[in-house]
Length: 272
Image 1 (tube, helix red, strand yellow):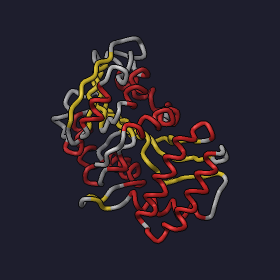
Image 2: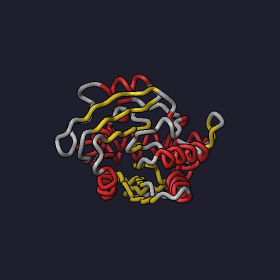
Image 3: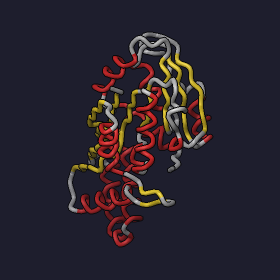
């Protein structure tokens, strides 16, 4: 799985929080109603930003289990200043970590789990890994909330004819084969939706959009660098024009003249 620097995860945290589909939270509350303790597993937790956003929106005593393969990120997520605060009703929220490969989780591992949650994870999985995880969640009887999965759609203002070429190359990069794993990339939500429906669960999806403007110039610049770099890695013939395009877009960003809408989707699964 891809490793991410804490600085990047911290930079995007506010944009993630503003983007997540809040209309999916009430059905989660309904599902969790009446539980003495809500057990949430945060898969690929990074610095713990999803817990900081979600715990205060859910009532009741909560126990968060943070999963990641990166021990440095787990240490960061467990720090006192990084932990979730109180629940919606003021109940206690406790946090523990587990360093492990989340693609190997089975139904037995999820026993007693109320909610499996993740942020910006699905596009990094393969179809086989997605199917195994879905089967484990359904067999364990837990709800699932996957947020901020890349959809492959980007709108920049002002527009440029090179936008589409970079976007198409980036999406191809997201679907690449790496270490023998064929990543789902922008197809992840469609695949997950179909798998969970076939397993008999109730599935809902909702858009979660990054809307970046002059107030998010640092995040926009970092995203631009990564977006163009991935596109040029996928199609090296774009590199020369891509570099000129990137410098032009970064100059617009620095001047507060660039707006970007990066589209993601959130997915909610409730057992039947």
